[in-house]
Image (tube, rainbow, N blue to C red; front, side):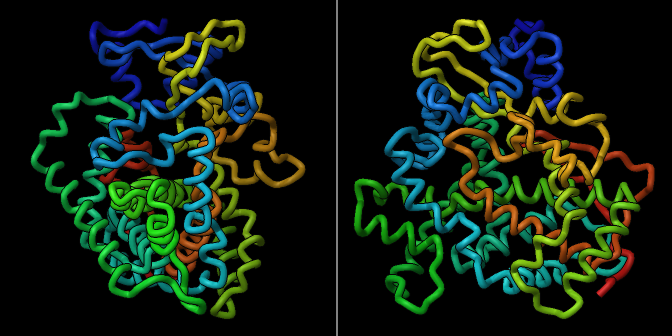
Length: 440
């Protein structure tokens, strides 16, 4: 048991830096330990073995997700959510949603995504301005996801989505705040607006009719067709949750990551210089070939290194489905578990000098991330982020375009990034950069 404060337990350490908390506890207590949070006792399975084990047959049979997501389902008056399902039902719903969240959903549309990114840059990143990076990135992500995945960019709902995510994750998922927080009128208004957005998406679909050959297919078409053809799998009560899920899943996570990338690259001018050379070559002829983004090893390394140092998926929350033994320790059925799969990100045996920002870790012959259980930026096991391949393209093109178009600088070369953990880890909203000029 990790020592902690009366009643609060270790909640303050978790709130300050969950990735560091899990890594430090792993170093001190090993791959299995317990901690307390607001009167609850939680068991942690941590490290490379835990990351690998989640994807094995034994791991899949020993863990379930339902309890941690039931509060979200109830809050939406829905019957299910993808991260809260396991087994065959999870596979069926994942198959419905797979195309909309995949890289294939934007094949042939890379230059369209670049155009949306340009629109966001020109709207929110003015020459001479000091830009609050996280809010600006949230607007960009919403513009991108809305336009590409649903055919609609609901920028007027960004703050409502943000507030809803904050409360639901903190209160109902990670349970770092008590339930009475949900009585806050600001949260109730924001949640009502998110439901309004979902209902508008249903109404828009009904007004234009089912997808036809030759039209651009979106995730909305996949969800609504599944509802019309198989209402047991996709009931009406679940439509708002499923249709607004890309914003809930992507707004904070992608915006956090892209904001952190800006910080780390600007903090390392030699990396910025190498990235400028790559992106200038990429966009030299205007429109790009989709295969060209494979030729950005420095930018890719900067993205991967940022996701190592500031992981979104610090740990996955699960419940034990049965008694089992892990690393010689007895785990009982129905125990609440944190699977701390990002711990290896901070281990010297996987990533030498783990505190150093080193963009060359990921190319051969080093390829440090390829060691078993070493690198888990999108989680592990059957619930690995469904939008992983889409997010990789979105982040790559967004950052390539930002560094191509803008000449940015930190407020001071000595600036050290301030971070926040709620609702997901990332740069603090106060982090800002100066737009010196437009490069192109």
